[in-house]
Length: 87
Image 1 (cartoon, helix red, strand yellow):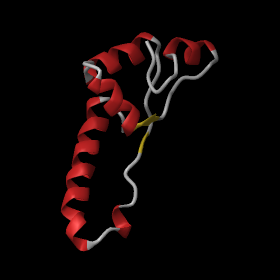
Image 2 (spheres, one colour):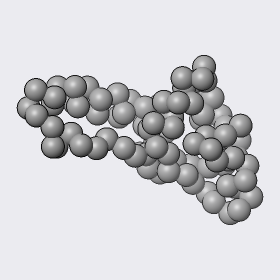
Image 3 (cartoon, helix red, strand yellow):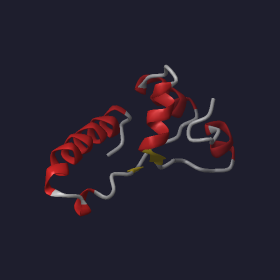
Image 4 (cartoon, one colour):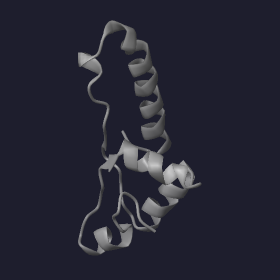
């Protein structure tokens, strides 16, 4: 199984103890019918932590009318990071 095109098994074998994830990759993974629990299980099985996730960009440059949608997206991404155990 791959997350963001990376094999957790290969990452662990290469000596990595953690992986930073991009939210768009997580959305794509979840869109394939998997759950946050599936991701947590996969990472736990390979003893990989998720110390950071990226990306909420461009919000500061948008028009004032776009800020409520940016805030809603920020809340969604915060919930996603919490669901994956990311500080």
